Image 1: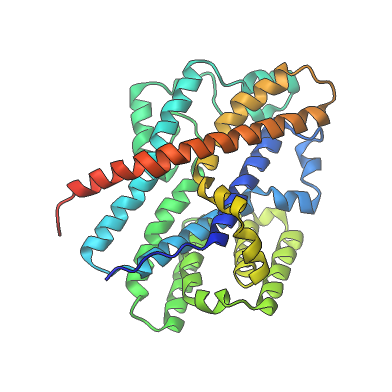
Image 2: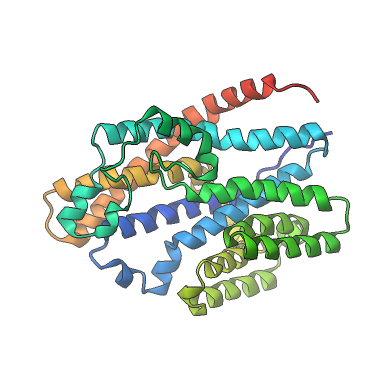
Length: 361
């Protein structure tokens, strides 16, 4: 019998903060924000940690891996369950992304991306790394390809920066495979096999799959950690700081992966942090985190760049703060609207309709 999935509000809070960190990092990187060059801005360890996109992405992948593993652990392992989980995992990403692809394609066709004009205006060359004028994303075949391949991060015809979704999506299949192999074993053997598989996948394929599999391992020690242990929490948070401060950047992305793992363990073990992260605003932020991730770059390259060019404000620090606040507020409002009407309302209906067409096993 399938058990009801319990939501952990603090996990939603962590996802929300991770999405906000990714937005802040990209805003600073692609607009040269806060007056300083990016390398000066990110030379301050605390500032760099709070908006570090690599750490935030690894946190998101790890929490997605944990959520997938937790959901699987509540279902009977049958062929139908495995089939339905594989298909639904694809649809839960592809269906909400599809309207965003159409919106971004229309924005590019209408000439609403101002990142190239901003690069000429400000000299921030990295702003030209997306939405190249020489490409034509609105061709039907490219849009169709983006519809099909979006869960693996291949939206090259539209130029949405969704590379992280590949590790969330394929990582979910790695999690399912390892759960099927190990679910009847004792916990110590599960952890040993998962650890060995994690090492092989991280070494032979990509380190970005490591957090997803760590999320599966975390499920098996979660009852112990979730009780709350301040000693474990302090130790994990200390390892987070040591890893982030003293590991050289040349070890990217290993540095981000390890920092994310220690950080999540530290949070799960700390009742105070869980209470803070489970508050109403952060819980809401977590509920819209997918849409924040999907639309933040198009918004930066359109609205933010346009405001930088057009607003008659002298003094880059003040202008950056104003543009950041306006962009953030509109990002949150649009994400809430898109989450409510696409991710929560129409996407589930479409997914249920497609799942209902599958043959019985």
